[in-house]
Length: 295
Image (cartoon, rainbow, N blue to C red):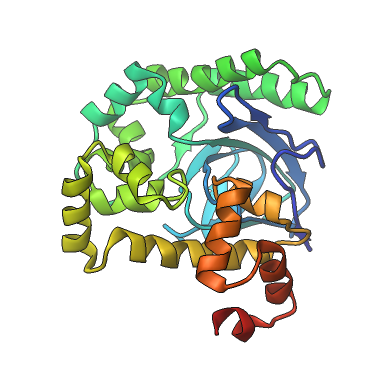
């Protein structure tokens, strides 16, 4: 039976916290019985999935059906849903974040960019070291006891998590593990895939995130993809809207939040791409009436 746990809610001990700049970052914990399935379509977050107990079989856009055993962690990129099955009774800690949390830490950003390895991504896990295990035990206990309420403490834990990654793991191992983020500095296509949602599907914002001038970004995009950035982004936003519309209890406000855009922009986007309001679009997709919104 699939277990649905939505971000920013409290179900089954699952909690995340919103930082002052409105970028969602934080930890969550959930327990799964053997055979439970978990599906997450919150695609503008990166995740690190840490298995404290048991074993899960994880699938996302970068890899399929990978076993993550007790005492190990795996990286999940954004821009696509992920899901897993509990192979045993399991306790899993989720760490969700955007690149903003790294950009605000110049030391962390310089570390990643300086040591980015220019090689193809391949699936790998990292062991949960003793220092990381101690941090996770505190986080797990405080979430379960409903004591994790102070946003400043949560942000410190976010930073401390990456501090442990820097201090207790080999540089090559960390850069290989985090390469889908790091590649934004060395791989244009990976950067686009990993950042178009954070840019809210806006060409100017995406160009700004890339660090390139608008003209340079535009020319490079057309050269690599064969279409303009606007055409490509429109198609990806359409795909994102279709995916989100199928999520149970989806609303226009929640869809806008998941797409990292305002409700007003979602309304304009929906009218331009589909010719209907967001509410009508969601209802038509749920009714299976795809032809009416594609015509």
